Length: 387
Ligand SMILES: CC(C)C[C@H](NC(=O)C[C@H](N)C(=O)O)C(=O)O
Ligand SMILES: [Zn+2]
Ligand SMILES: [Zn+2]
Image (cartoon, rainbow, N blue to C red; front, side, top):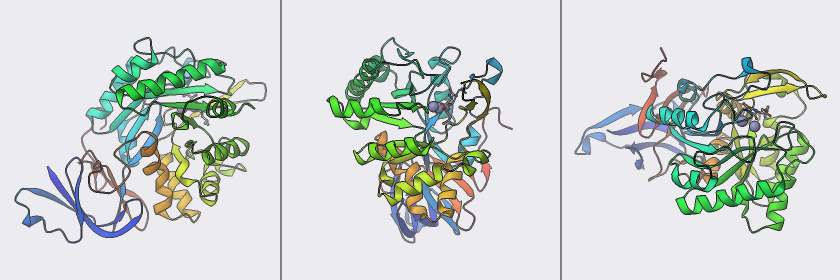
């Protein structure tokens, strides 16, 4: 079905004015005052008066089958409900495993990815989990990337963290080399998503790779880079060399980090001041655990990441003075660049993934993914097991 969204104020991300957008699964045409009765076929009209039209949000790090477990079996976190993504404007997700690569499987990750895709989202996954040697589908990272359609890279590989496998530099380098060539052969980005812990080695391994090997920086994609101010400073240095860094979004309920001296909002504003916003993405760590450990490394407790943190963070950054057309880049054009996706822009030929928000409140009203409304004026499409 061809559709037209009329009278929306469009942020492409740049604000381009009030225009009409005609689309199928991709954007066909954008112009003023489209008259749908002039086209010689049926076209569905959506009047977006009073709404802003943004590119669908891309969340590059979600534990779609659940994660956690750092406090024992009862702390394994629940899997993702697709309605959470839709209500929060997320139309593209990269799924991953985390600490627990034993009871969480890649087969389950793949099945969940296909389920989310079949119900309307755009989904990709990483092979591997925290540990090296990595868990794989086929026994090899290269084969996983080349032969498993949804696999676009490897992650989240833990470094500088007491929960990592304490990988050697050679182990890390081999995974990145395999991801690069696997990506080349299959036309995929071959991205390696590094989970960077609070350890004092930070992203030393990544600097070593770009300084001492032939591997280009675009394959190295560290996350949790606003975990603390010290790590973020190193992240900015990595960004100055052309690298992309991912920040874990500010969790709506987690008022601790919003009160702590440094959080993701500060990090985004600082990147903007340093003219490095184009090197920043944010991710929710959705359904991943957000565990706390004491100084002796004893587990203290954990909360669960929420995909709602992405839009929450963008709104907070706008409240702190960053223009909307800048703030949304961290979840549209920037992650689209990391994964080489035909997404993240409201331009002819781009995928028809949209979020429509109330221009006064920035509340999310409607969501379109692959040209289909998944939520229209606050009403979700019918979803399995979600009543
Ligand atoms: C960035 C911080 C706050 C959360 C972060 N979460 C994960 O890495 C995911 C988790 N280990 C899981 O497997 O579900 C962490 O633990 O450091
Ligand atoms: Zn992590
Ligand atoms: Zn994670």
